Amino acid sequence: GENVEQHPSTLSVQEGDSAVIKCTYSDSASNYFPWYKQELGKRPQLIIDIRSNVGEKKDQRIAVTLNKTAKHFSLHITETQPEDSAVYFCAASRTGGGADGLTFGKGTHLIIQP
Amino acid sequence: GAGVSQSPSNKVTEKGKDVELRCDPISGHTALYWYRQSLGQGLEFLIYFQGNSAPDKSGLPSDRFSAERTGGSVSTLTIQRTQQEDSAVYLCASSLQGQGFPTEAFFGQGTRLTVV
Image 1 (cartoon, each protein chain N blue to C red):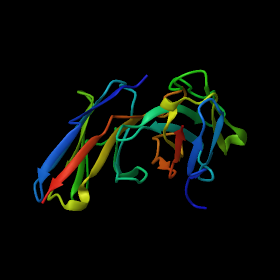
Image 2 (tube, helix red, strand yellow):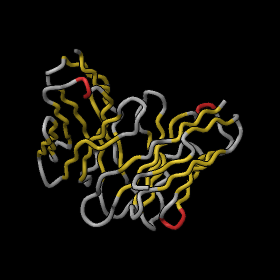
Image 3 (cartoon, rainbow over the protein chains, first blue to last red):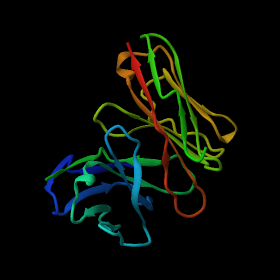
């Protein structure tokens, strides 16, 4: 089955600086890569996703890049703000038959220092 | 409702008792996932249902855990003879799956299980 590795486990950045979280996946058939944000005591919520037919996607201060050859993808947050503090999870998934569903990385605790 | 609904939101049970956790996915979503999240930890995959296919049970930690999904909609996760290490938040998610790319998975608010 799919295996997703996520780094770092904790990331502390100064407010206004950029943050980058990296993930690798093992199944070359994976074709969908979402990122979820989980604030303390709340459910995970999708913030951005990318499909394997594109290499980069941007939404305001958030961007995701995908390198299919290397099987890794990254989340970039620019001009970080206090409300960006949360745990971020990457995930990989694929369609079609078979049992694999949505496999998550172990999460990155992002801390924005004022 | 419009979102994924889980019940109960909190459950305290005595060690050795059985518990049932319920998930109502978004109407029309064919994929349903169960995850377990211990305090401050990641999302541990438990089981995945996709349409009428056989579920992927590879994440279930022991034979005390089982799940079913009736009529392709509501799912129940059952834990038999609960142990203290079963204490966690159990999250359910659903999404549209089918031809082409998968789509966003929406999470329920979770059931916080405490085994005393």
